[in-house]
Image 1 (cartoon, one colour):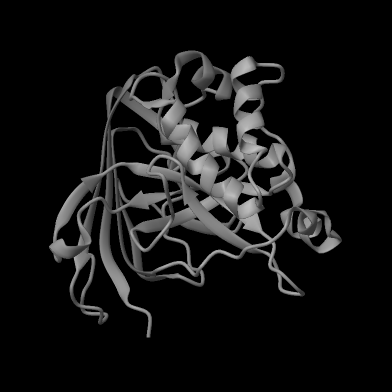
Image 2 (cartoon, rainbow, N blue to C red):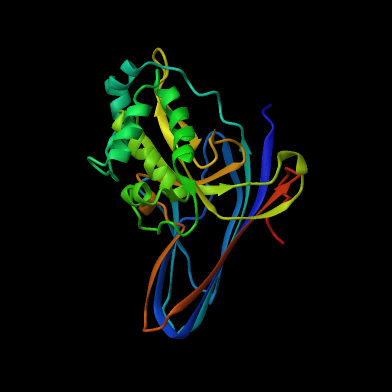
Length: 298
């Protein structure tokens, strides 16, 4: 049986408004995804003020939790807790470039083959495309992209903004994980490899440190669709260009989309002239126990 890593996750968000607001409508994409290598055992959302929650699954398969605080208020607290088990990813498949042209691959890739964030004619992008285009296989291209981006660009907070595009990354020469992923998506899609943006968390403590709580930020990586030799269905392979590695058991996936705008953790609007002060934190605790009694409560 494949060894698991188990985590308790707490995502705590507090808004303070300098005057009363009303009709505060929010959509949360914070529930860990269930897939072949990841299992969400517990999940809860608690709000102050208390209001009814509404849940649905979006087009890309991410659970969305929506709520509205209609009465006047000056504080909003969103307390999300989850318990998750993850496993190592399977060995990525080797395949040829010709396999990307099969109708089955094109159908599976769908909209993830379409460019959504481009910088046509930019010399920096042309140079990156030339380098990555020399890789011998689609898998080699994914691995090269994950090494090349952190080689060419500095990870630096404040160099870009949440709505920055890859032109901003190229011009600044620096960015954060979101920018690195958008660049990776652009490069892979240019080479005919379907790729999607992934939002989640990365446990940063050493695997040998056992039961330990760490403060983390929301993280982003990408998944590339790689064909399988023969008649097998293509598979999605996670790659993290911020950390020069394939995604593994320390990566906890929330959801995916074409780009960041498809999977923001929190998106909302309210009515009123107040300014908001935001305080957000994510705590990941590695659990030694794997039974249901190992809850995310603290």
